[in-house]
Image (tube, rainbow, N blue to C red; front, side):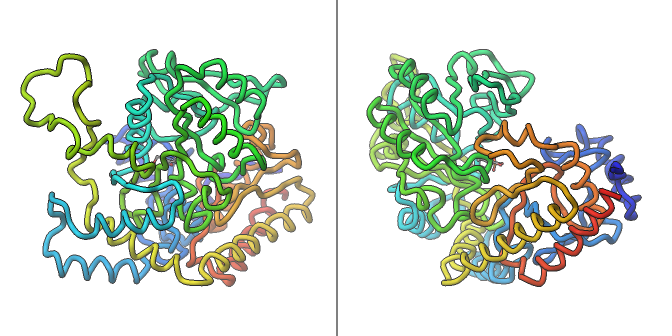
Length: 455
Ligand code: PLP
């Protein structure tokens, strides 16, 4: 099999722009995940399911800004709603409360079983950060339990055991640091759990039950590996029994697996939920929602107003409400884009169509790969899936590491060459703009990529 050389397409301008960017920006990218070798492709414009790069190449986009763009690029309903808001409010932002905040909060309370009150943030990162702070304040405990291989944003407290270790037979979770520059404090106060391994999870939680403030998790790992049938239910029961706050990080799964996220599908209600991505209709957003008594911890109306307290309170952090702030929180344009997105998603038939198109793509890919003798499976739920080149059961991210990753990387390069945009080794996300015709076109390109791979 031939290594996919990057790129047989014209890519001279991307290469040149990358060199220029790398002079001023470390690695030439503004987020590490956007980097790939030999250089990332620079995009120039986009429309619906398609991206167009600076060299004039067209791609069918399956990255969709890491899943955020559930209606595809430049959906006219979102653009029209933004224009209307602009022409009505006459500003980009008020810097005060406004009507759309409560409107969006009400929508989330209506849709998510675990949400009774809401605060907005500017990213998924900030949402999980606030959820963890709420849990620490609620319980008075200082340890965080998180699952190996689960991502919750790019900050110290959760950059632990995100990049999974290869599967080991005893399946003990391993505590690792995912970045330079992390103080040891966080690792010392983190308890790492194995996803989909109930007995070990139960044992570890029991051992640390008096110290753990919260268990934070992606209810569907990486947005594509579903939990075992009873895993979430048992976890809910045990955390309740131990007085541990259960946080569902639904930044990926929110609005992707349906209007009510993973909690809607599995019927398990967390104490706190973090949202992001789809919620912003393509703009930066995050939200935390949860039980009213926990959420009220950050209400300045019920605590001491710290902005008028000149002296330090007698003991650290006491006598203050939980502090949460952000200049751009609840941005009216962001909320407008999010509300317009949700309005479309609420129309009947939207999710079934999205899922039918996803199934068509998954089945087609599996069929092509099997015809070319490549062991493969697609793993996912709703409109997100991953392509795993192995036939072993996939229950944890470590199982993906056991698959043929070098072949997958080569395939992804060939897909880029054929005009299918995927961040190498990453999952696939679909949008409502990925019609049955677009899927057919994708499968034609996919077969060409596989053919050139095995040539
Ligand atoms: N949580 C999950 C599950 C995510 O997938 C992400 C981003 O990919 C985040 C949190 C962080 O969100 P953001 O990139 O908006 O900070």
